[in-house]
Length: 223
Image (cartoon, rainbow, N blue to C red; front, top):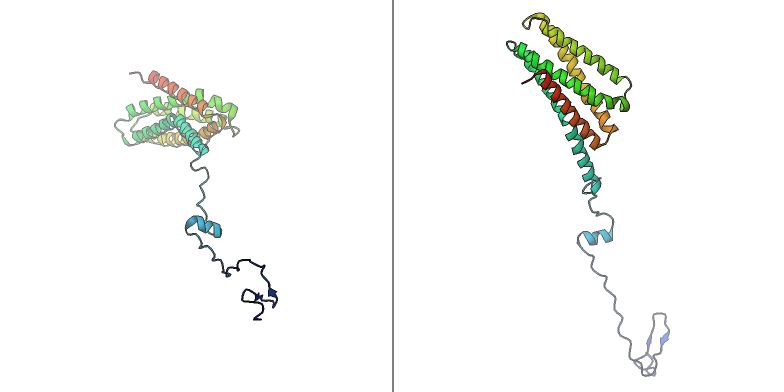
């Protein structure tokens, strides 16, 4: 260092002299700024990279649309419950008739009344709406033909000996045809109605079906 320049003068890295103004305070020593420590946890991780993400909400979860959809589904199920329940009762009545041979005359009368009441209620309350809204052509014609055939089988069963072979044969045919008719009602008719009308109208149809069915059954089986 040149002694004439004094200790306040210093050289830069490029070899040039630095001349401070007279009376200026000396420069503080240069220090390296320390980088801030990275944050920990989900928030810090999310800022550093996209590797951490908040779990995505399932479609419709905790939303008003999901609650509305479940509520409408519940209304639909409640509206169709009387029809589905009666279908189950008819299937159970068929099983009892096939197993309990000594009680067949009484069980046949009970089954016939239940079947006719169901068919009448379905024709008056469901099929008239299905005639306007059916998605499958020809379904009403098929249902009417099946209804007549089932009623004929019931009449023929009442005319034969409950303990004879002919009764067993007719009962097998009735069981197959009635179960097919009820399966079509469950798989085609009710879904078509559910798609065609709103929940409120569907509830009205279910209630009307149940009222008509009860009235027909009471007329056929008084007391």
